[in-house]
Image (tube, one colour):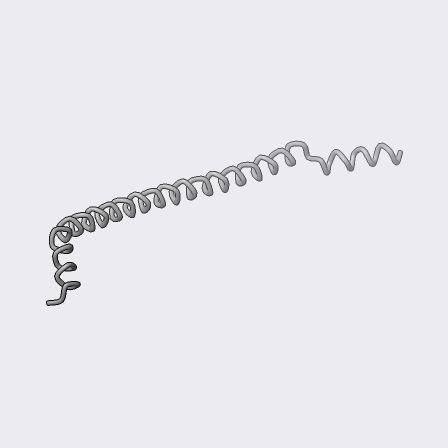
Length: 88
C-alpha cells in the first residue's frame, strides 16, 4: 500500500461514521423541509381556490344586484316617458 492510500484510509476511517451520520441528518432535514414546502403549497392552493370562489361569488352577486337595480329603476320606461313629455 502506498503512503497516499494509507493516509486516505487513515483519514477516512475516523471520519466515515461522522460523515454518514451527517449525511443522514442532512437527508432527514431535506425530507422535513420538502414536507413543509409541500404542506405550504397545499395551503396556498387552498387559499387561492377559496379566493377564486369568493371572487366568482362576488361577481355573480354584483351582476344579480345590478340586474335587480336596473329592473327596479326600469330606466327604459322612465326614459321613454321623459322623451314623450319633451316632445309634447
